[in-house]
Length: 86
Image 1 (spheres, one colour):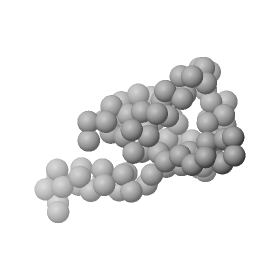
Image 2 (tube, helix red, strand yellow; image 1 turned 120 degrees about the vertical axis):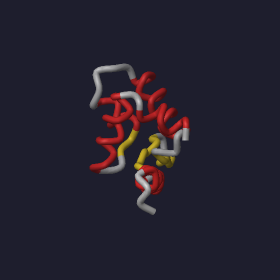
Image 3 (spheres, one colour; image 1 turned 30 degrees about the vertical axis):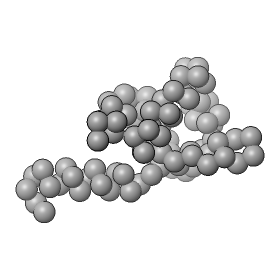
Image 4 (spheres, one colour; image 1 turned 180 degrees about the vertical axis):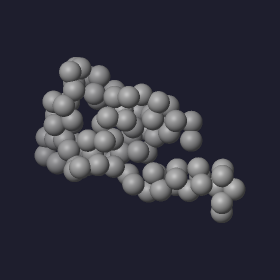
């Protein structure tokens, strides 16, 4: 769960997750939405993958990223149990 909080602690990574809510995207499409280098976006995507927040699939020469919604469901469940509402 530590990887999860680390991944969510950065605004750029949260913005990437917001982009992926609309549709699956290639790394290049994601990078084009930010004023930082493609290498920086790649680093952020790797952190999101390590936290299991995004999944990636190779499609020819591109890598397509998508949200892993089951992790978000697990997080919401966990937060809900913290409130004592099993």
